[in-house]
Length: 331
Ligand code: ADP
Ligand code: MG
Image 1 (tube, rainbow, N blue to C red):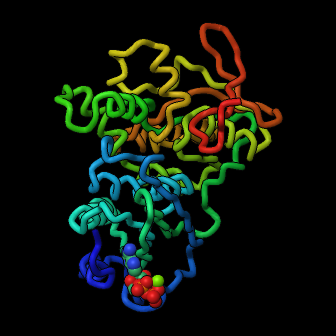
Image 2: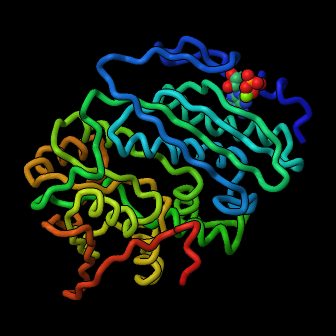
Image 3: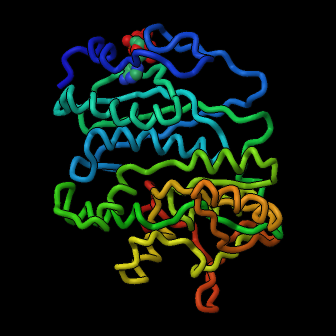
């Protein structure tokens, strides 16, 4: 149980800051930073709820903090941006200790420091049931260069950055055997993908700085859902070949049907999916490969009306926007 909110805020308040545009961080009624004339500002927010997005059986407090920030940074990456600041609103039930709460902030700080991000504010309230953590991330991108979902054009290739399925496979393991099971090294890779996803910021930056016409989306709700969002936003059709979808190598031990489920509908991989011209792909693939970033063509874009089709063994089916949907009762 948290005894003193003010004392807690003092403890989690960063001792120094990275961003030179910061004027006032934690400690006043609002944070102040100076916006930069050459950049567009980016801002996004995501909430994680105990019992919905995580449980104590699947995530340690440090991991909860790490992931709550990572999923927001992933949205900045999907715009091609540079993450700069974050704010945290936390609703705390009685049974959480101050040490556990401090660990949540350590998880955020360990990831945030990789990107020189500063924690500049938040809110602390009590909750009757379950911990709720809402993170707001600010970022910036060179004016006019954001990678919008609506940028897909007929003739473009569809690509994925990174590989898919590991997070959902890791979650399956955690739900059946919990955090402290003696997992194999292979299984630990799957767990880590679920618990500590690394957002694709560097890839997003390379894509945005190329000056090419690229559409981009991060994969939070599964490839099926995210490709449908691209198709709808751009009013085109996407055609995807399942054999080309990059599956995480640690999925090999599982039946193909499971792999398919995890890759297409599992979600929470926090990789990127987008479209660009073939010439663009030829230009960028050596640059990304030099940085050890995996870029895979999985299909193509045609004129259309916002649909996605999946091809497997010459069989064509419509890929529906199903994935994890909080309000979907499955009717
Ligand atoms: P006020 O009553 O003016 O809203 P608060 O006491 O809520 O002030 O917050 C004091 C300072 O601490 C503010 O700068 C606020 O942004 C920051 N803060 C409060 N709670 C958190 C939190 N959970 N994480 C990070 N910063 C916080
Ligand atoms: Mg307040």
